Amino acid sequence: MTKIGFIGLGNMGGPMAANLAKAGFAVTATDLSIGAVDRAVEAGCARGATVADTVKEADIVVTMLPAGAHVRSVYTESYGVIANAKSGALFIDSSTIDVDSARAVIAAASEKGFSMVDAPVSGGVAAATAGTLTFMVGGEADAFERSKPALEKMGKNIFHAGAAGNGQVAKICNNMLLGISMIATCEAFNLAGKLGLDAQTFFDISSTASGQCWSMTSYCPAPGPVPNAPSNRDYQPGFAAAMMLKDMRLAQEAAHKAKAATPLGAQSEAIYALMEAAGKDGLDFSGVMKLINGEL
Ligand code: NAD
Image 1 (cartoon, rainbow, N blue to C red):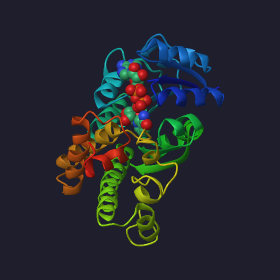
Image 2 (cartoon, protein in one colour; image 1 turned 120 degrees about the horizontal axis):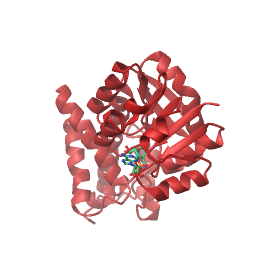
Image 3 (cartoon, rainbow, N blue to C red; image 1 turned 30 degrees about the vertical axis):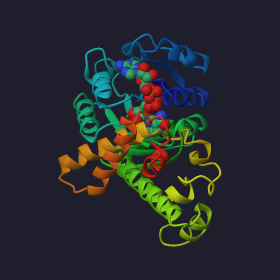
């Protein structure tokens, strides 16, 4: 039986580890939070007392951590994954982190003879629980193939995005596009309303015309046209503006380093930062509608 060491049992990692255990993997799980480990044990995982204890017998190590600094620490420090994993283990980092950290950690693993992929996800807690995440995977082709049996138990769509770090590139570029398109959609619905065109009529026209986009047709930020969109429950997430802001900041950091012009990405980051400054970044990111129409 394949043994998996799982580190980071938060909102996403908890249900992901549970799905691996449910699928029959022997999962040992750890987190800084004892409560999170208790829940994983209830879901069928074995308790990992430390990171070293969690990875020492694992064939595959999966990490789901907040940011690049946590991933660098958990992999490269003496208490961590690289120093304590058994030879031949495969590492999968599913955290959303900066491209440089992803590439640096994969290089450090590779230097010690380990295969590793970056495999960030699209889809929130509901998709993590249902096992329907989308994984964007960067790394060598053979490491990608080895990661698939585990990823398939946590997700529905598994894409190989190319070399190490490219999973993170796909993730932040997609979310930068989403973040921009949501603000543009809010502006259009707000302007239409101010000019006397109601949201449903504008939706009916624009969703079949050239302004159509996912932010409109699947997640309309104006209440009414898309019944299950967060706009119909006073913008309760969903996907919190704070998380969108994290991804927009990662995109800008990468854009600066790559000298890529992303003027709309920069402006959009600044707009989500206004939601943070207003203390409203716990709202869904489509709640940017409230900022645009002057309600925040
Ligand atoms: P979270 O904060 O709920 O969970 C992170 C967990 O990591 C926490 O339980 C924390 O205690 C643990 N942790 C931190 N440092 C640790 C260490 N040194 N050792 C062991 N455990 C440690 O975050 P989340 O919402 O589960 O998100 C995880 C990652 O997934 C983030 O990178 C996030 O951007 C990304 N993501 C989240 C969502 C979402 O909807 N929540 C969607 C897509 C991607």
